[in-house]
Image (cartoon, rainbow, N blue to C red):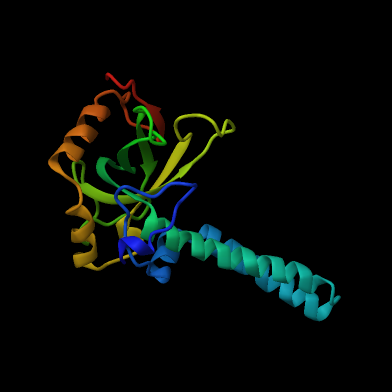
Length: 205
């Protein structure tokens, strides 16, 4: 994917885009709830339109668009979202910590997101504390659109959408030693035991 192919996300372009091609079946196996929910709703709407009333085709059309948008958004997430280094901080349950700067371009707003990694595999095995993980994130605005920083970010491991060692290695190669040092430094500011959540860290922390 060339730089010219990258489109803005929420009005910005990722400084380190993920550039990953999504294996949709692999994503479904890792995160089945939303894909299954949208698919079941669509099938139910189509069946209702066929068996009960033609007007329900409108609902079916809306749900079809929702399904298309879901998968399109997923493609954008891993292709053009922001790649960030992650670290396994708990094996049971599997938890991954990811550091980023929530700034929209002015100022520094460091944050750490700890999230449950579910059925994550690292190099084909169960994750162990200290394993490094490549992730890709999208950023979410808060209620105040004029705020200088994003309100949240949503990292997902590359392993959720690809089993290609070259693709994962390519993503990991984009992280510098300074990126990993920054993650370790910010993690020192996160309370233990680690729990899922977003942790805002003072810029001078």
